[in-house]
Image (tube, rainbow, N blue to C red; front, side, top):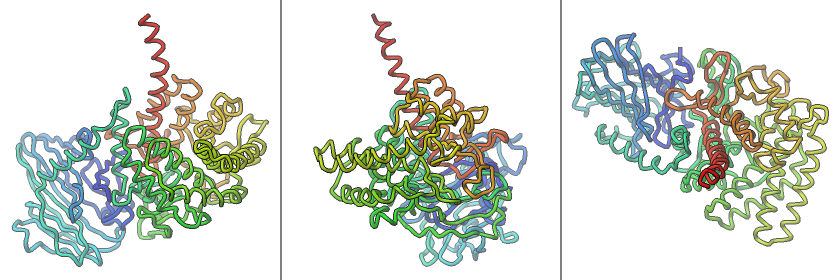
Length: 604
């Protein structure tokens, strides 16, 4: 059985990523891209679906782990009665081939290790042809080929075949380092040249530290913010600037359920929050690359706008099921691709992202204006229609409140931009559209009986996306209707421990079986609303609760089950880490503002 989701860590090379469990097993790896078929897929199946484990033979070895500060270099330390050793896992930045380096470093006494590598291409389905390397000059080199893919493993450890697996045993003593280097190339290419793994470690550490050291202080939350920033960088496809929502597919929102989706794509709903987080921390190059990816992805007919795209901007993300995989802890189906429909809120996301980018000082071009103008002209008609909402509801289309609010955002930001440019004609046009939407939302979405905005027009249900209303400036956080909405969300969607559900999955609105965990991004939004309402003590309390949910290496999944006390959903989740960064920044600024007058009074 796979490890618990929180027992994984991520390593990556800015084009793909692998998940490493506490027991030393790499259980998930898609090569050569985030969205490529996996060659290690035991995360969603069994070891027979592919994994690479390096661990002590002693099953009682004590395990601790950490990332080297400011890096994505993972160190897993194993202690046995005979000694201690650390497995260092990382992926160097690419220079031709893509490599995973695993160094087993002896620290005290000696530790006996075993390694098992099970390579299964095509999401655990294809058994490769495995042969020894003829040019390795050592006992342990192998290569595995199937169809278009080749993996090449170099190590001094003697490896043997055993029932469609490759295994080996070795011992490491204090001061000794045993290297393993696994490389991916296309099968029509020659096996890649060997690399110096120790030199690669030094170069990788220097690269990460030179990048992450630019992160400014965010008070007591600097360490958590930096780790979240590194995680966002790890989920970035560097050739295009796209940021995937997560490194995985089909990790369940409810154990044993069917809410299992492929998140190895780029969601437009994340655009503004991600841009804001990167720019607030001073990472303008990454923010600019993400903004430019957005504009390339959505270029074309506005009527064909999607909620997500591939990492290169691909639009056909056909969804199918890998029926041979039993799923994470029996959670089926395992879905590859994502057929979620288009929604109105993406127009607002794009407009707001462009507005924030311009306000943040990112370079602007006429092409940006042309794309936004086309989107707005389409939205003038499209906003009247129902849609599936931010959560990609696979049930009946509705006039979702959040979608209408984001349509308002699109026209509001356009009007503000026009006003700044003294373009009175455009300002009046877009402001009239924004005002019409605003009036309709207040009339049709607000429920006087509950004192709250509803999930959609005429609904008695609430939805955590309503927390966006004050965050995007639709109404101030002090407005009685916003106070009532937050109170209703607290009453109906907040667990006793303060964590927030997206919506009531038992209401039948999404056409799926009930059951999912608390959505962590929504919990960060609630903390943000508390800050805007001046409820700083409650905001800090909730934020600290969320920080406590990070695993031992500072990572967050999409959701959390407070009853089972475990993470749920795809992992690590960009949306959760973006939420962490933005709440830390907002809370830090608010507390500084409160402290500043006190410092003045103390000085007097």
